[in-house]
Image (cartoon, rainbow, N blue to C red; front, top):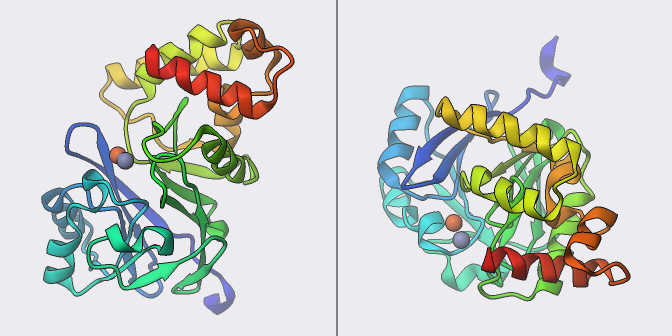
Length: 261
Ligand code: ZN
Ligand code: FE
């Protein structure tokens, strides 16, 4: 009967710390439940209790404390398996499984693909569940923004972001922070005439006024509105005075302007 049907993974999101999001991904078939990063133990435990789910995995995007700080306590309490990028293995507390770029891990029957996305940190990665159309991007991409370049170069980050641009427009994007409203101000400053962006900014203000999340976003929406995914935009290029530059140069200049904004 239903044995050939792959059930879509369920995602539960909840706030952690100041402006982080915690996420649980649940496979109803196997009961597998993964926490995407571990910003804060208590809200993750509360979410697990509320949903009646048992933690089986932690999927770390990178080593920063607001992403891996709860690893050891949660592993100690649940015996869960910790997965992270081989590139960052030394800095991921309690790591059990080290995955490389394009590696596929079976989460129940769901293929989970890992892409290395260095830039914010040198060992950052993202987790893509193609059959459910969802990607967890940590601090690589935000709605209308991208991560700060702490350890990587603009060239690396632009290469990382292109991996996300390759995903289908319908892909739901779950990022690690609610930075969208502040990001919108910057995005509007470099592309004031982008109609899709103006529309999104209005929607963001409404959501935030009602204390609602602006996440998930989608690859398609970010492609149309996020300046860090649009270095080929004529309008953006005109605003920052780089008409004939390469996409990488436009990306780098946009990132620098955001740092100073
Ligand atoms: Zn970070
Ligand atoms: Fe972070």
